[in-house]
Structures are given as C-alpha cells and as structure tokens.
Image 1 (tube, rainbow, N blue to C red):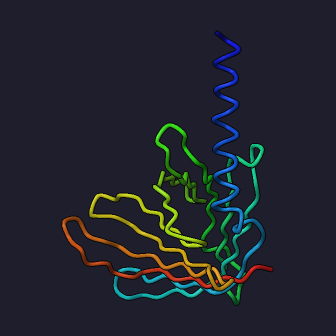
Image 2: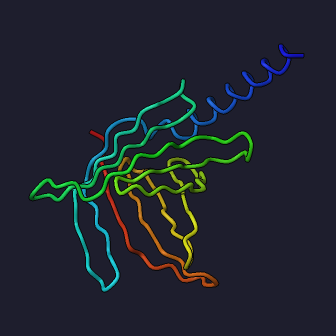
Length: 164
C-alpha cells in the first residue's frame, strides 16, 4: 500500500512538473525594462524593473524575484519574491508572493493563452488584477483595481520588459 501511495505521489509530481514547464517555461531568465505605478491622488512613480526567474524544486515551481529601482539613484523601491506553482489539490496555478515590507499574498494565476496570463487576489475593497501578454517577445504587464460589486477596472501599474 505504501508503494502504491508513493507511486501515485511521484506520478502527480511529474504531471505538475510537465504542465508548468509547458505552460510557463517561457518566463525563465532575466528580464528588464521600464515600469510605472500610480498611487491614490494620481501620483505616478516611474522605475526600472527587473525580473529574475528560475526553476526551483526540480522544475515544479518558478521562483520569481522582482526588483524595482529608481532610475537615477538606484534606490530599491520595490522588491518581491514569488513562488509560482501548479496546485494538484486545486488543479490550478497559485502565486505566493512576499514583499520586502513583510507583506504576502496568495494569488490565483490563470493561463489565458500562449504567453498570456492573469493573476489576481482579493483586498478588502475589491480585487487586484494583473494581466500579462508576452506574445511578441516583450513582457507587457498591466495592473488594475476592480472595486467590489463593479465591472469597472482602474489601471494603476504597467511594465514592459525585454529578456536580457
């Protein structure tokens, strides 16, 4: 019985590994480019963004390290590390992200097509949604806030990265 359970666990791991490699292997590498963030009061911050993405745990998880810096002073404005994985339990992708200011979220991550994805998570006043499109070789990502009980989506983040 123990052998059967072990074989089933190995089979599930290999299935998840194959799926994530097929769906998200394009993300592996180093990316950099320009990004901007709009805060309440329409205050816009422009920064340089780098994403370093590598495999972890035998190609069953992507380790995503994102760093945003001030283009002039090189001061780190934003730093987050995420673990992107396929959950066999929920049969969906999850992104568990941690920021330098000690915050964390677990987001739903959906594949929308070849090199297209969306990740989102709930906040008390609504939902934060990020849409990724890298079909043309440039990783374009836009972030939106969607208030509760509304179809409106308010843009607040944008980045355009090239693989280096």
